[in-house]
Image 1 (tube, rainbow, N blue to C red):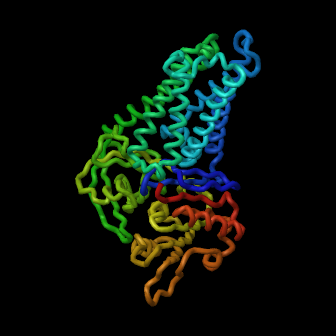
Image 2 (cartoon, rainbow, N blue to C red):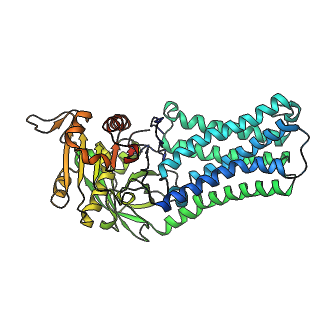
Image 3 (cartoon, rainbow, N blue to C red):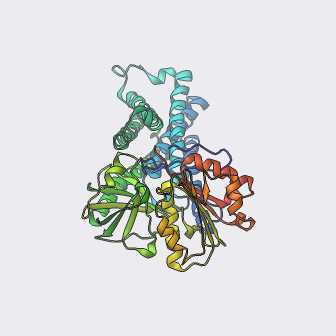
Length: 475
């Protein structure tokens, strides 16, 4: 993830974390605060379950069975170990694209939670090992893996695997790991670390010596296995039965190519404008080589899907050369960067930079198809006038939408009469009247641009709850 955390507001990184490449995007999303009550209750329920999962091991160790002879530090160390196992299993849920998890927050913020909770799981593992090393060193046995008992060696192997996960993820660019190689390594380390941790728990026996402890351990293990089967077997099988076919590859301005896909099976359900999907073309649905791209059309213009892709990396460059007729597999849609989450808005401010216009375009298509009369002010930054993708399409939309379109050209052509340079506070004040301060502000573009925009909007009096954003940039 490449976005820098904002200490004053919740953030996510792409994931897909969204960890991805190119448009290979690191997507960062801050959900607005005016979500429907059912979404908030759903989200709070998930957070409560997460807290319960962390607290439960300590409660079981404290209350189940006879008091251990090792004292408080021993019990606390065992709790850290069990908590680490639970958090490690939770990572498979957070990265498994479970709709019941991603719906209230958006897939992006879930991936950020995965990133930080991974650090938390490693910290618990180190705490478990460190307390035993300082206060109960004999319990660790021989540190040399060639002489140590197998159940202790598997515990240390698990620790090494999870440490390797974090190092290779945080420093992937520095290590020069291509996304597909990193992802294969990431999965291998995660599986190895989790299986080693389970073997360690079984071998040591401290966490399985009472019925309550065995039930807790079994729940964690079965949950981990269920998520694994769903993510890497059942979902790919579903995609294999519902393939797509590329029916058009259109070159757009700015080097962007729009791939149009027609369904050869079931069409997506719960598709909202502004969402994205993971895309594989010419590969089996079990392949680890997939990347997230915005669906640049609206559901009302389905069932075909369009993905507008700019060649910013090796994979996205290859996708722009996709021949018509190629077979594709789609996992999605995901995401919460949508006007459908903002049903009560009086109007919209949309600000895009470069290829960040694609989710904005999808939302505009939806407003157009619905005959929505609400006003929209779109400020669209491009490096040059020729690089302004979809400019003709946006201009045509003004006949059917209450759309104010402001192009900002960094290097304008001779005779240019519009805005030039970069979007700053003065430009925003010229084009955003006072009544827009309470409107949703939907921002999408490179990270540094959005960092600056959020600061300028706060200075203008726009509340954080009215700012919703995604970041498109290389990772």
